[in-house]
Image (cartoon, rainbow, N blue to C red; front, side, top):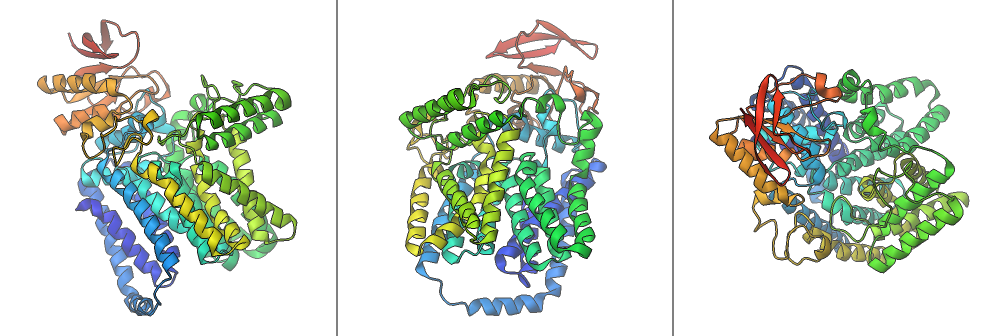
Length: 640
């Protein structure tokens, strides 16, 4: 019951804004306000270590009470809006068909998000592990850990997961944060398409493009963060275009709030939003004049305020507000020469088109030929490639880490080229600016970040942002027939990703058999929740279960985890707390910058080691621990 409170607040906020705004704008504003409330509650309660069920419930009760009071004040306008809605004529069949197709995709991903537990690799390593620490500590303050991504990565999405985790008492709702991001992105894309001049068929096509993205479908039932950052970016674009139209301080504030939430969600937001901020800043310099100072201050102050807690925590520990410098060096290109940028542009784009083995081989060979004969650098240049990786176009995938979006990427490429071409021929300037901004955003992204085998995952926000342009271009160059054909192809092509997610399949057809983590016939409905946590690291389940069972027999509620920088922590939390609700997991033998952070847990009474070369005995806090078992690389230590 308590877990429904954020949803109640969201609906009340939508009703409040819906009295004066078109319903899609009202929903977007409600999403932004809900995001701001999540951040405010989390940061405020964290300061006094009160991130607990009673305090979080009390905070949401206050928020809902305020929302009820505001809706009540506009009850007359709300009633009048309701009467006008009854007079709306029956929508055409094409509109109903499009809505039905989107609803089926959204429903399928929603069921997956609800039934399956979080089980992506990053979630097990740091997304969900950091949430478990925060809930146990009662604060989002930094703590000692060997997995630094738990600390310095932007925490916006996990703030939402944390709220639901505390209110529900478990991770049943954790995937719904990204699912909500998908739903709202579908709506927001149609708003931007409208702002670009697209008629209804173009707005519907924009929504369908977003709803059918393979990577988006897969991520919408996970606790990754790329869809969440896409949500706040499309909101910021829509609000920026509203600000350009009405030049009001309210619109400037909505843009700033959306941008601030995007910055709090993922570092890629800075790269994707940069062209928008530059274009908007240039427009403000030319057009606003006397109003420039006030609007500019609002657009600087609000994002900084939203991110202030995150920035200050990182600055205090890492002397950098957004990253741990040593780890981020492995993500950022070691050179920014034109050849390096073009290399990444080519490789990042090619990875979106992975399909059959023959196509993938041909693409990989073409990229290698261009590197050898035009760029004169290696496609595996260590200065522009993730450490240890070798470039090959990723095969067709049903995994939220690697899936490409070939149809959507092709549409985005054609639409961007058409938009820029029209602008050069004195066509619609806004479409030209939008297409140009998307192009610059992609080049900035490729030029700054090394190529990684999972680069397509990070590109999801860019494809979501491209959807309104696709809708506007297709609806301008043809009638409804082409738009319907494109939409139909995308919907049909999306079905395999809805039903056969590699780690969370709805059906047992094994369409993606080659990369499937579960055997044919096994689904999220006939596989235990415990097994689903370990689908990507099956070898860890038995030793983790045995370690927790031994801790339970010994009456040990404080488990020390000795891990490397990318090992699985969260499943140990799940098993330990299922055995004893008071149990917790804390990292030991931490030697990085976080070793000086405050440790909230007690002295461990058992150690679980997942590092290589485990010694027979270790000393921790003056206590000698002896290894009593070792299975699948997991060692268990007890006090001697």
